[in-house]
Length: 161
Image 1 (cartoon, rainbow, N blue to C red):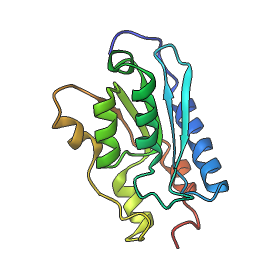
Image 2 (tube, helix red, strand yellow):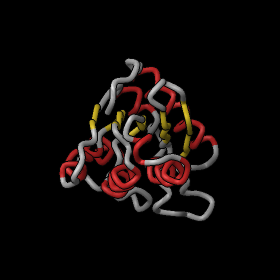
Image 3 (cartoon, rainbow, N blue to C red):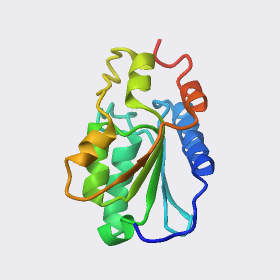
């Protein structure tokens, strides 16, 4: 990543939490992701997209990275940050890698999410850290998280019971 203004990670992470709450209000799972440009501009927001078609691949991060890769070049995305309410699963980390994102900041870890969801049929969590996925690639993706764990956990209260 090239030099850019210092980003307020907690501020943007909380914004991804707002998107996750909006997803829940719309009948989806409580996951949200945002794309922030190098200058701190929020470029895109994405709620979980499981409903209405029950798309098991409709994770907020994967959908956001698909949209981002259709709108921006990997050279630009290298200087961008994806903020997400929970750590990207292996599928979402792969999408972020292929889109060209330079940094990921997340709330809840996959392991922490698995403790909350158990083996719920709508979220059979892959307990694989996104850093492991990124480490298998040929370019570096900076990872920051977990952060604001209690706030991230609160998004899932009474959801997976």
